[in-house]
Length: 340
Image (cartoon, rainbow, N blue to C red; front, side):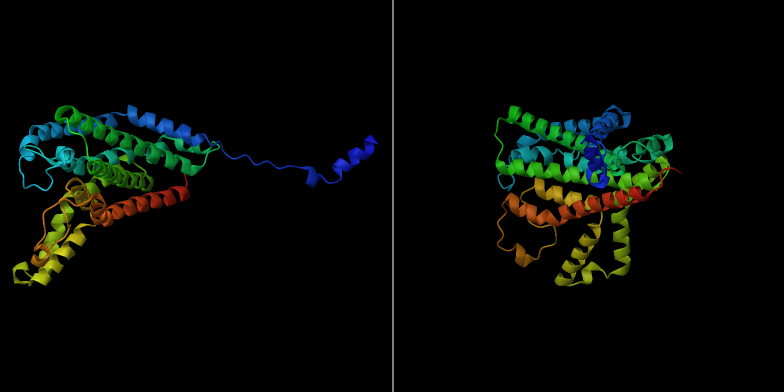
C-alpha cells in the first residue's frame, strides 16, 4: 500500500509541484526613502539653502509686521480684511515680499536637491551595487524624488504654521477660512514650482555623466527663464510687430494677450501669476481688460473658488511641466545602461 501511494504522488509531478515567485522586498523603497532623506538633511548644500530661505522668511515677516498698521489703514483697499495674507504681501519697500523671494530661491532649492541625484551614484560605483540587489530600478528614482519632495513640503508647511502662529500671537485675530484656503493654495503652488525644478535637475543628472555639467546646465536654464527670456521676447516682438501706439484698442489687446501667452512659457511667469492671484483676492484678471469691461466693476475680493478657476491654466501648466520632466527622466533612466 505504501508503494501505491508513492507511485500516485510521483505520477503527476506537474500537478503536485507549486512554483513560488518571490517579489523584491516591499520595504526596500521605504529603506531607500529614509536613506535619501537622511542624506539630504545632513548635506551642507541643503543646510545652506534652508538657512537662506528661513532668513528671507524672517526678514519678510519682520517687514510685514512692521508695516501691517499702515497696510490695513487704507479703507479703500479691497484686501483690507485679509490680515494673514497681508503678512505675505505687505512690505515697506525696503525688501520684497516673501513670495517674490521664493520666485528666485525656490528653483535653487530644487536644483540643489536633484542635480547629482543619479550621476553621483553612477560615478561613485554605488549604482551598480545597488541595482544588483533585489530591488526595482524605478524604486531608486522614486525614492530620490519623493524624499526631496517630502522635505520641501515639510519646510514650507512649517514656515506657514510659524507665520500663522506669529500672526495669532501678535495680532490676536482669528483666521478666516478664505485666508486658510488661499495660504494652502500658495503652499501647494510653491511646492509644485520647486518640484518642477527638482524634476528638471534630476533629468539633467540622468542625461549628463558629470554632476558639475548638470548643475551648470540647470542654473543656466534657471537664469534664462528668470532673467533673459522676458528680455529676448520683448526684443523680438518689438522688431517684428508694429508700434503699439499705432494699433487700435482691439489690436492692442490682442497684442498684449499674445505677449502674455508667450511669456507664460516660462515657469517663473506661471508661478508669479498663480501666487499673485492666490495672495491678492482683489485680482480679477491676469490679462488686459477693456474700458467696457472695467465700467461698473466694484473693487471687491473674489471668492477662493473663482480665484482658483482664474489660475487653473497656470497651475495645470506647472503640473504638466513637472510630470513631463519626470516622465522623460523615468524613461531615460529605465533604458540607460548602468554597467558602462
